[in-house]
Figure (cartoon, rainbow, N blue to C red):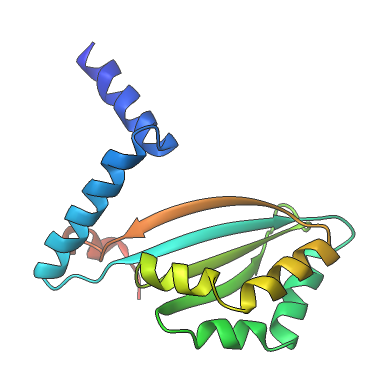
Length: 147
């Protein structure tokens, strides 16, 4: 029974059923980790899916128009990179990473969001979104990473 409760709680966290509790815990973890000198980031993975190569064309226009460079220059942006799926050529992954929620909110209020929304419509893209709060790799796991 205890194992089932742990599994259920884990699934609830993933599904954000307890979003308020998770947000409080994330803020607490961020504060605790920052006291220890660890860097935190919020990373959002957006999968753009279209037809006829539209997702890739969208990413290419984002880059060629200079919009990606402008986003990368925004305060708090850590990473803004597109990747093409090896398994589904109609899907492009955007890895979008920010220092904190305030940086994301400022980005969402910026003129770039109108540009992005217009291009999403132009290429008739659909999206899925995953959001992560990252921490530095623990020393115990560093031996598994080949640099």
